[in-house]
Length: 193
Image 1 (cartoon, one colour):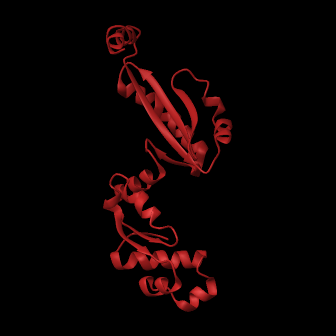
Image 2 (image 1 turned 135 degrees about the vertical axis):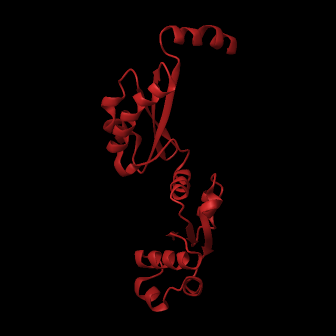
């Protein structure tokens, strides 16, 4: 196949003025494939650039690709369409050219030089493992704490026992208090519970 590609296909593409392509991906989460197809239906029938939509596990992947005489021109063809896709998907779109939601989180925190303090309860460390195994994930994680019971939440994270009784252990208030308690000792900008 390589000889055919090198001797036939690539020379043909150069002859017709196409020698470079650009491919970008927008990832979306929390929205179904059918809904994304509806939202972007008018974009999928275009010739160049091309929009393709597919399910990728629990996510939706929108691929935008273009061909042009050089890489810069191909990327320029994709740029406006990528902006339109992201605008239409709104908060469902979480990443451009990333492999996963955890990679997008790590990339964004790393770009802004923000540390992350994690608190997990009843997860067996799953979130720490997901983020930590992501490229550069260890660079952003400042601490990880397991707080499976109320005593741990009080002693490790400084959450008031009275507040735990009032707001119950699984509540928005408790999650915010726990995340705040995790951030302070390690000077992390972001706490996640």
